Length: 141
Image 1 (spheres, rainbow, N blue to C red):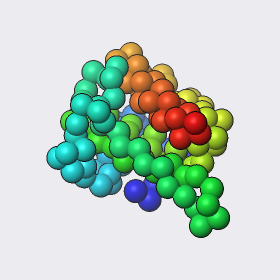
Image 2 (image 1 turned 180 degrees about the vertical axis):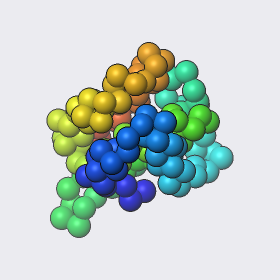
Image 3 (image 1 turned 45 degrees about the vertical axis):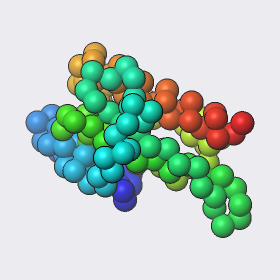
Image 4 (image 1 turned 90 degrees about the vertical axis):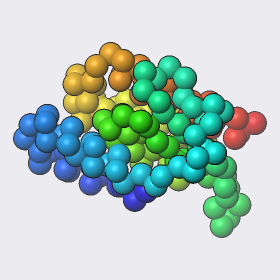
């Protein structure tokens, strides 16, 4: 996934209506690389989401040996898949300690997504973020 947060913010700013912004979210979801069938496992399923959401976390290393987290994900719902893409573009490629010190909810507020998501979708996003933070904590252990 090659979404850059600055590009997402700029695109959201250019779009006039929420219908257009939702369409953009759906396009973002389509940019996600598909998960393998075996990755759509109960182990990778994010609990607390009304839709099916899967998150694959991999701990790698930078050339200097410092830890780096890579994330892949998917959902069976179009808008939720776009939210997955947005959240993963925010956290993917960060060190575990940077994941723990970053708050994607600030981005959601900046994009005004917080006010336009249903309570179920907001809970799902929180569940996904909690899972990512838990994976980052485990990577530091």
